[in-house]
Image (cartoon, rainbow, N blue to C red; front, side, top):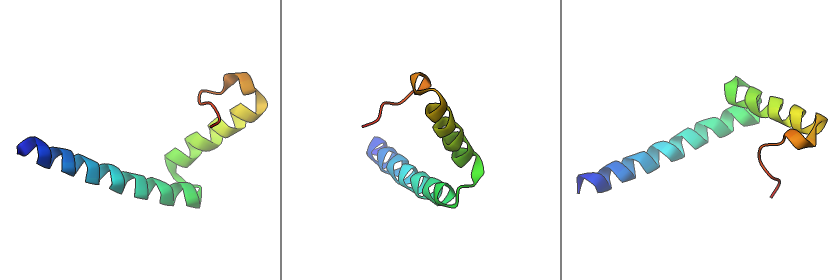
Length: 55
């Protein structure tokens, strides 16, 4: 019973964190946006350095 509540709480926290991250990405500010912008620049300059495949 406790594990089910912990799982539900973790799922809600994950959803909340994703919503917050989307706001920062849309506004293009914050550390997450800086990381994503840097990754995008590196991927444009040298496609061999991409970490994630395009899907």
